Amino acid sequence: MPKDSDGLGSAPTMATPVPSSGVTPPRAVPRAPDLAAGTVVGEYHIVGKLGEGGMGAVYAAKHPVIGKKAAVKVISQELCTDPDAVERFVQEARAVNQIGHQNIVDAFNFGTLTDGRCYFVMEWLQGESLGDRLRRGRMTMNEVLDVLEQVCRALEAAHEKGIIHRDLKPDNVFLVGVKDDKPIVKLLDFGLAKLTGEHEMQLQRTRSGVVMGTPLYISPEQARGRNVGTPTDIYALGVVAYEMVLGRAPFVADSAMDIISMHLHQIPPSPRQLWPEVPGAIEVLLMSMLDKDPAQRPTAAKVRRRMLELRKMMLGSTDSSKALPAPLEVAATMAPPLSQPPARKRSMAPIFGGIALAAVVIAVGVVVMRKSQTQTQTQTQTRTPTTTPEPEPKPEPPPPPKPAPAPGAIVVRVDSHARIEVDGVCIGESAKYARNAATPGEHKVVVTAPGRPPIEKTVTVESGEVAEVALTLPKKTSGKPTKKAPGAPKAPEDDDAPVDPFKK
Image (cartoon, rainbow, N blue to C red):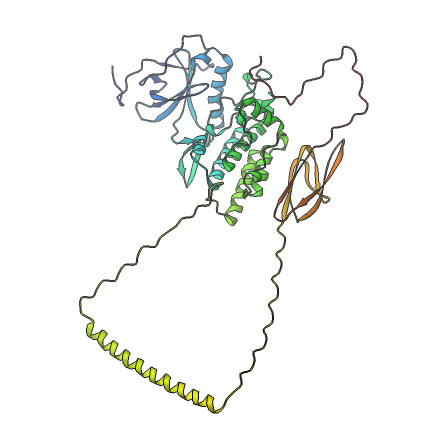
């Protein structure tokens, strides 16, 4: 068998480029084995298999002439007969190529193997995923902000092109080496990406009720099977950021359906409840990204600008190089023993002897002089006795001032959007969550919403403590119930109920 410059065999399987008119239609073929080392795909020779996912397998490849490394993603044989799956695979390569951003993996070739499987060639990445990094241990705040800032830049570029990722999670964020003490971030796997607006593709009119995404990072609108937009990526990024800062996802359960239900109906635990040292600004940012209402979530650009502000605040107040959260570590250091000075070669005994004799003479003279002075003072005191004046009483020191009570805070959570006031001051307009600093004592909380009776509650704030209150607004009243007319259509089902992805 002829060998190439790397000692690999020549191509037993050849790849056919895609015609300029479009993608080669898939055809039903028997299950194909993995690509063997030496297989020629486009202009690259396969070196070995790197891994396998839901859409297919990824292989390491190398250009036989210039030695450039690349990764080749090949769709699985089972999906070759599914037109929607093939189109999603093609869309992934098309989406990353349209965006063309430094924080998104680059795809630069596409084709079809002779056995009917599509493939595309993308840049070679060496490093680890964010998921692997989190499994190794906690990250410092500097690392958290560096990674999130670059992911925001990638999402900004994608959203400007009308492309929504729809499957953002730590395993799709890749950390490639370090540049200027910062990890280089690459966003991967646009297999579920959706093109919106004028970029709308025919495939994206997917069947109603199909849940697409990973349950742990899925947005409420995704869980309902509704149309998604750029806020869907912000929600998933909020889940990722929550996990990076606190070491756990906002919702944890034993089944995927339970997690989806929590995304639909439950408010995430307050970050400061899990870790009181979390800065309040970070808590507000995370909770805004995880808002159930997509319209209330910030854009990727606003999230990135807020992170830059947080970095400036942290550099002036805390050590941002510490892990979040991290136990207090005490390092004991021991000073090395002092080295002894080297001995002189010439003897110093005569000099030290003279110095010692002079010291003895001086000491004897000092003793005689002190004895004479003592005798003189004794005689003087015997002749003229004196009275010692009584010392004046010292004034008592003033009592230490009482410490001022430490300020606290009030956190208000509402089950639906409402106006939140504390002591007559609005701290949240059309919000479900609001936090405000408060002095120790009683405070009046008023929650109002259109068409619903207001709620008033008195909250007591202790010194340095956070008082939390959860309120449920009464349902809207619509007068007397009307009788259902014969033959009237059936009332729609609960719109908040999670969609079963396995129900046909």
